[in-house]
Image 1 (cartoon, rainbow, N blue to C red):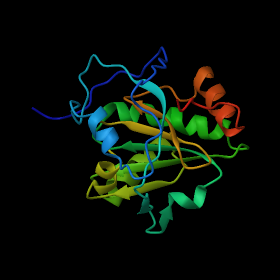
Image 2 (cartoon, rainbow, N blue to C red; image 1 turned 120 degrees about the vertical axis):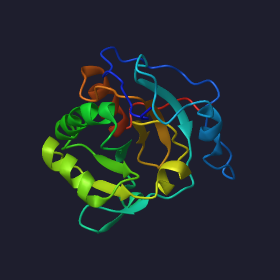
Image 3 (cartoon, rainbow, N blue to C red; image 1 turned 90 degrees about the vertical axis):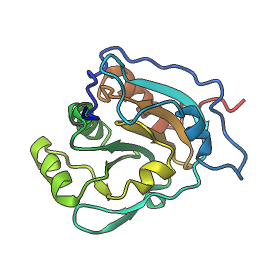
Length: 202
């Protein structure tokens, strides 16, 4: 049995609070996410829908990986911007279905302090480049060939997406495919980029 994600893009955005997902003490690690996702499989069942959950989480694992041209990109270089970090793979059907909406989101917020980073998990540059060219993706795509960054960030399913604010704090966690260019999400991310949307830490 092939472990392929067979999710359908979510038509109804659901923002579900995560009561246990709060800003951890500075000494904590991404193990908090591992605990939250402990029962999850790499690929969600076909009937699952994407969910975007608010909370606060301070990751202490850097994201520093090569892009498709071999140039290293460090997430810390984007401090001051809201950054959407999307983990995906070419064999993950919902990942591929979701990516055009992420590009449209990037287009919509191109004049805002906002950036998108795609992270290809467990594959090489040639396979990732083929998808990028086929879909017309223009945001940076990094190569996590050994899946080490995927694991360090506590991710367990594809696609997994993190929304990081300008201070480097994860404000939202997306599990499964979402329509990132929906009116609701464009409005939410615009407000985060403008510093108008904060998730309570208590």
